[in-house]
Image (cartoon, rainbow, N blue to C red; front, top):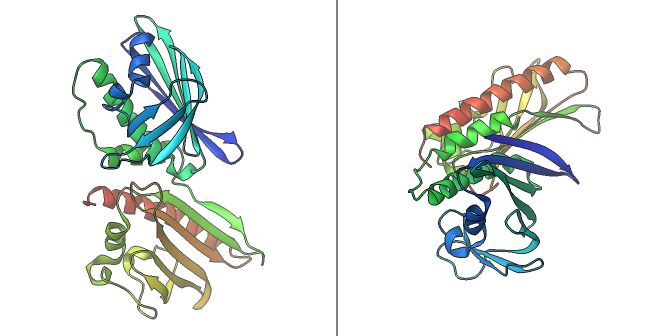
Length: 291
């Protein structure tokens, strides 16, 4: 098993998953291209005109009209099947390997921070494909833990440092979480703040981290946003803002930013480390909570 994430140009990312399957390319090809077999392991129902330029429709359970559309971009039986998936590109390649074959999936997309969701999803799909080929029922796995392992493996937990127009700095963390915004908000705000927080109130412990002294809440809209000024030497030094957006649809997308003034490099470095650890602890806590 070999999974990698790389830049593909134009601000897009390429996720590459490689698996060895104990079946020849011709048998796997059928499972990759036959809608009747795709229904057992692919994340949606598939309608396909199997020729280059042929139209594709991806229908999710309970809906009649295609939720997404695509076009076949490459077709070389039983070696390569590539198509668009909305704005993304999927390329499936099969190479003989002994009595079986080597399957390589390359998924190219624009949402880099969604990579862990995509990787864990395709991991589960390919596991189900292998089970189908072997005449077995796929065993359900823990997608949340798998997702978090990909976050770490792909370096998606790290924060970025940006320079602001006034010469100050902005820290930015973006992370796809495994639970919905309501559950994340409860984890951050605690029981007393889960129903709602207002400007002027103290910042709940979950929204604060060591080394970043918090003033009062300046803005709060449960379960989406919370911001406050952080203090240095007893005076406001910048703004901390939490946002819980939709992300990949598998859970909330956390975007955390902190701004700071010029000349506060030590505080910037300390904050970068502290928030990295704080978000990791939040992610671990969410794994123990039901969505």
